[in-house]
Length: 212
Image (spheres, rainbow, N blue to C red):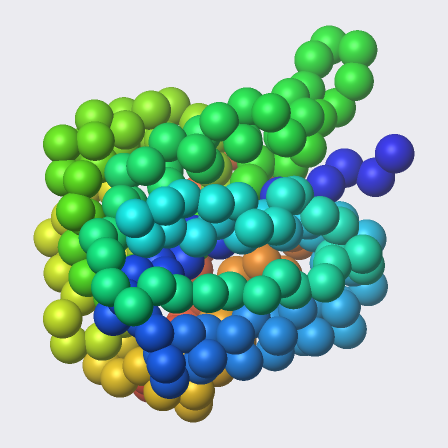
């Protein structure tokens, strides 16, 4: 069996993402999948899961091979909180359930990649702070957090990972560039598997700002 490269994508679907922002995210996701399918190695190894979070948290796409993947519908409520902590809790539960761990007898999956996209800040701040050590206890090649739009807060994301980027705008062009960059990371991560070190991130496009 081919060793898989799991990719978990957490998407903020709170009320502020309704309309153009979430439609732009959908375009970017579709472009990402199309790009990765052109890479034979990615097509053979990459599996993607999508978890959305607002007042509810849902795994709308269980870990699915790229070749079999059909993007699900992503919906946003009119309003509501951004339960990022609950989303990370579900991520850890799905990781434990879906990712195949290696043993002396067999090789498991490659270390997963994690991408978190939000346009605000956690509403469940205590749950968020409490789950961060649990997330970090799970092995990820990279955790990348994206603060989208002018109202997104980066300080909470910096608690989760050093790899934080920001997007000044939330239009389709910007999200397309972000997901192109995600595609590059997935392709780079897949070709760098076998190392225990964090994989260096590719140079981001002009629309994606590295947060120091």
